[in-house]
Length: 135
Image (tube, rainbow, N blue to C red; front, side, top):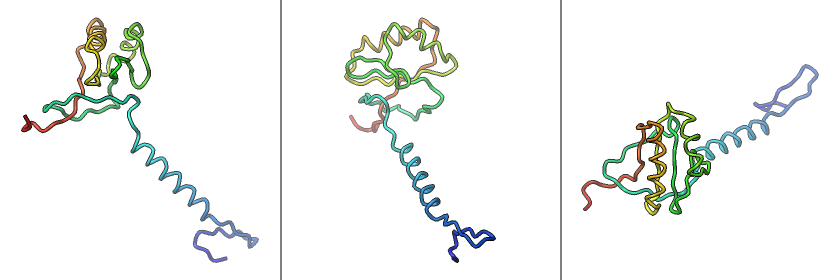
């Protein structure tokens, strides 16, 4: 057999590598697509601001508050009682707040208060970029 992806041994037997290569390419495409189109763990509608900029999510602790006031830290649900322990895990990582525009303000202030009680002043508030020329 003279297939370009075939391996022939000394005995004349051949092993067709084409199906293995196909599977490897399919797995590669699957993992590329799965990591590219991942959605955030908690769906929030961010408020808009003209001064928004890009955020690097890998080096930050992301605190999300949804429209019902539920708190999530790095995609995991958290209660206000758990926040001091959770926020003290990685003090070297800045906090990024992603607060739904319909979230109760008291939920945001509770999280911000816990961060300040731990002397955390390294936080960002994530917003949606809008055109500064719009009224």
